Length: 434
Image (cartoon, rainbow, N blue to C red):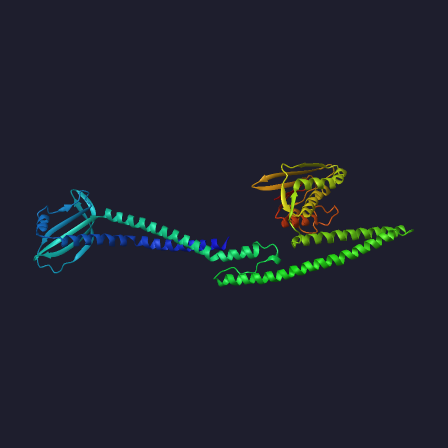
């Protein structure tokens, strides 16, 4: 999981937890908030009535029926004004909840009771609203609270994701440019990625330092390979020449002749191993050019001509059905080596009278070439380690286990994916995905 996603998830979880806690607190306080809101409304109505009060208004209210002198048609609110004895002690407003009957209907009201004096006379004013209105206020508060909380959550999540993306952008640039996109240490770009974060600067400088060491080691390895190839192949060639000259010596004993043949065979095996390892090393060190136009169909036809005798010796049925002549740019000699190694293995590990089938297809804008055989196949463990050096799928056959290692190195050099599907005693299929 990406660091940016982890940051976003952490922020989301913490904010959701905070919002849930705040929401719970608000819900528990909702009744108190609603009552305060309700009482404030009653007080505002009271103040408005007192402010516009006059003799005519008082007479109008006092001359109406004594109970519930003013209420609306839905019986949601009422105003009652009554004359009370003079010489009251104070003018106070009290708010309470009480049941009242209006025209035979009993409702629960929130009532404000206020005693006041007007022109030396004292009056008692009652303003009431049904609790249905209170429930409406509570629902409104819940609705707006939910909207605010959800909006706050979404805004903070988007802001956190955007900020973390901005904050981590130098980190991903360092990973891509300094690690993922580096194929050859000798062409590594040591220029620092612009960032104001000290941690990323340390990471960038550490990677640059590490790549300098790797570049030095690669240079030493290339020099070592060049020296080893010269130092080993030269004496091998000299020894081979001497042994061949000894075989031409007249009257050489048969026993000595057999030992010389065995020594020559060992030298040739050693020479093949050194050349194979040298080839892998040079490919992995990008010491080849990829500038040639290659036709896969032409290469497969040429390889068949080279291996036709071996295929006939094993009585193998060879079928190459290519739907198109796929062309790409690469190193022709290396691609020839890659294909000949795969087809050579298909011959070597095939059964007598078996078959080799070469097919192709285009899938998801990728060209796929598959070389299948009906040979002994490999177990799942061998398939997993198929590209390891000096491991073979069938230990009864002669070889050094370098064929697929060479295939993998050349494929990587050309950005070709290699997929192996194999089953014991049923055969193997190797797909090259371009």
